[in-house]
Length: 281
Image (cartoon, rainbow, N blue to C red; front, side, top):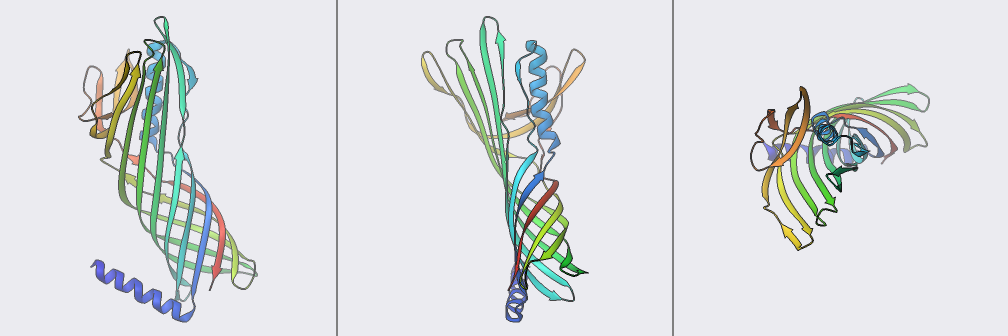
C-alpha cells in the first residue's frame, strides 16, 4: 500500500512538472496551542506550592504561543484543484520561576518546558478566483506531527548549597489533520502574497522519554536514578481544594489525596495565523 501511494505521488509530481503547473508556498507566523492538560498540570503545581508554602514570589507563565514556519509544493490537478505536499517547524517555550522561604532558608524553583514539532502534511486545495488580483485558496488534509518535548525542573537553595536539575526529553509522533483558508494577492504574473488562517488537530499520547536527575551540595555533585519514564497527569486534593499536577515517573503516582491518574496528553491542536509568498513555475 505504501509503495502504491509513493508511486501515485511520483506520477502526479511528474505530470505536474511536465505541464508546468507547480507552485511553492513559503510561510511564517504564530500558532495558538492551548495544550490544556499539560499547562493545567504545570499551573496546578505552582498553585499547590503557593498554598502549602504561604505565597511564593514569582508567577506561572502558560506556554501557549509557538513560532510556526513551513513550505509546501503544490501540484495542479486541473479544474481549480491541486495537491500540496508540505513540511513545517514550530517551537514553543516559556520559563516560569518563583522563590519562597522554607524554615530559615530561601529556595528557588524554575520550570522550563519546550515543545518542537515537524508537521508533514498532504493537502487538497481548491482555488476560487475573486476578480482582479485576488483569489481564495481553500484547503484541508492529513498530517503526521513529529514532536519533541524537553522539560527541566531546577531547584536551588542556600540550605547546604543544595541544587537539583530534573530533565525529561521525549520524542513522539501522531497523525492529525489541518484545514484553512488563504487570501492571495497577485504581485506579478508568477508571484503572490498571501495571508492565511488554519486550524489543526493532533495529540501525543503515552509520552515516554529519558529522565535524568542530578545536582550538587556542599559535599560535591551527585546523580540520581535515570532511565525511561512516562509523563503523568493526576489530581491532588488538599483541604477540600483539588489541584491538577504533572509528574515524570517510572510508575503511576499514588498516595493520599491523589486521584484521576493518567498518562499526560500533549495537545498540538490549535489555530495558526501566517503570511507568506507563493511562487508559480
